[in-house]
Length: 282
Image 1 (cartoon, helix red, strand yellow):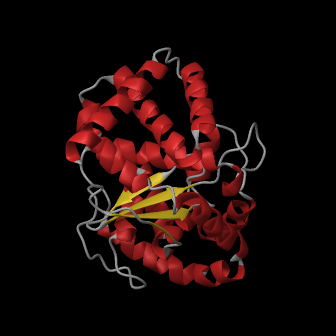
Image 2 (cartoon, rainbow, N blue to C red):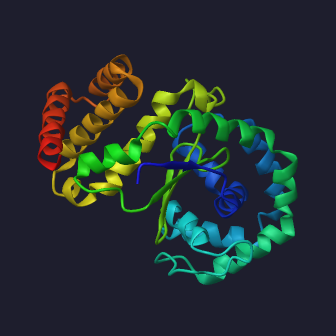
């Protein structure tokens, strides 16, 4: 599957609104002080009166109980829209009553009208990601890296709300949904538009899909080897997608930031491995 679909999924966007009313924004700031997208501030103010809604109380409880935020998105994405009736098994730890409460949250807040009145930043974000991702051939690269095609359709969605510090990878029976926040700016400035950080966008997308597609192999590799393999794979992908200069910049940065002196060697080894595998399958 070589295509990447860029879209706004209303089910996933609804989860971001619930998170905006929850304790999540404060938890993120405690983790790392940062500015959020101006639209995230708008959403936060819009949903603040509903912080006592059962959907918000439920998401706070789920997070406190260690339910991964990815699973909260997966739960809604496994439901039919707009009625939000589950069509697949929900992730473990996600209470079906929470899904029902989120459906009520959507009605109580009339958030669909809010989105309609604030369409411009979403349109801009989709346009940026289409230019960056659609011709990147990321699924093809992941297939060559892992030795098997990416088994599901890949849908990429901009996430201007929350989580603001990291991406989300949510899985359904047929689709992988990758939600990407805008690139974080230096210091406490608002995040950059996606178009100003294509290297970050592609590196983050590749990182999540390498971890997904090679989970079994990486789990057996040990922490250091896992880091080396992942960063080497991202370097090679950036080389293909953006050119040698961007790949070299990423490799040098990671070598210093993550204390990986042997990263250049790992890149060469992985390049040779992929070339040999490619020649065997052609």
